[in-house]
Image 1 (spheres, rainbow, N blue to C red):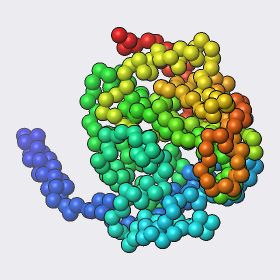
Image 2: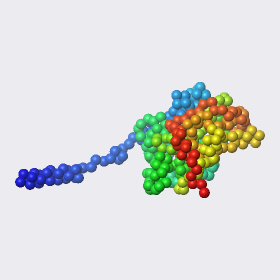
Image 3: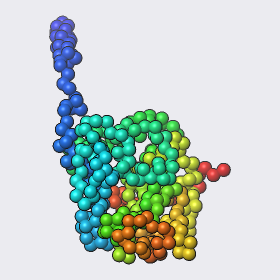
Image 4: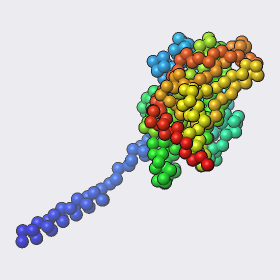
Amino acid sequence: MKFKVILPAIILVVGIILFVYLFQPISQPAVNEKVDWAKNFKNSLHYTRQGKITFYSAENGGIELITQKPITHFDCLKCHANTKANGEPIVTETYIPDCYDCHITPGDKVDDSRCLGCHARQRTEIAVLNLTDVHRNMRCVDCHSKEDLMGDGNNYKTLLERKTSVDCLNCHEYNGSAVHNLHGKVYCTSCHQTTVISCYNCHLDSAEEHQKRAFRPIAGFEILVNFKGKVYPANFMTAVYHNRTFVTIQPFYSHTISEKAKRCDECHGNEIIRTYLETGKIVMTKWNESTKTLSTIRGVVPLPEDWRSALKFDYITYIGAPSNPVKPEPYNWTFLSNESEVMQIYAAEPLNEEQIKKLAKEIGKS
């Protein structure tokens, strides 16, 4: 009898709780709150250029180790398009980032040409190397949120250390196929990115004279590293300064995505890893002094734990006047060294021995 009295009371209490929960006013999500984008922008990587400062610093194993000069000695932080959004010319030496880099009127729609005016690698992918991407019919802001572009109010050392809005799974559903499950620890772009691009090699003697100079853009390869718990594509960049040599390896995303993934044998048992296992060397670049031409590695490069001794680069230097603004011809370059004086890896780790063994197995060969 006692149970028959208590049960209705319990049901009544539960009903009241559900009613209050279901019909209470719903607070607006934080995303709808008014954001002070001008304030956020002052903390953004676009404004602070902290990514370059972090990469350059001696503390992080950067180029400062060979220049022995602060980044402000060069124009690295002043890199920008030639004009503001409204066409007003930019004076590099006095340039400070502001809203009008991208906006004619704050809040107006930004054309992709403004993005490409500063992001030279992406411009090179499209206009120089004619590389394809399944997203070419989309706009930059279709993937990059306001928080990406103008900051989320926090300070970051580099883009590699913050969570951006860009993620393949934002638009593409993980289908749980056998191939996807097998490569669960491999990031999407490792297989779907056709290449990374780099500019070989940055001539800092010219940068010191306010001239941006490199030999030429190169493509047709990608490096594999460990980054945030995944096997991730990476890139390299080389630089020379007063006959001293430098190379950096960092995770990298290029806008060269293919709907079709790489074949198994492009990564597993490829010629690059076979040569490494036989010789202990991976020749990344080779300079021919007689023809003034540069040969570069082609294909997927697994970064081994002994990468500092395994990777080989031929460094070249510009023999014209560093202050000369004219684009140099190949004969203005000459061989400098095949030794890397300073080698940096940032935000990533090389592949471990077990991963190298997996990649050494020949899979998918017909």
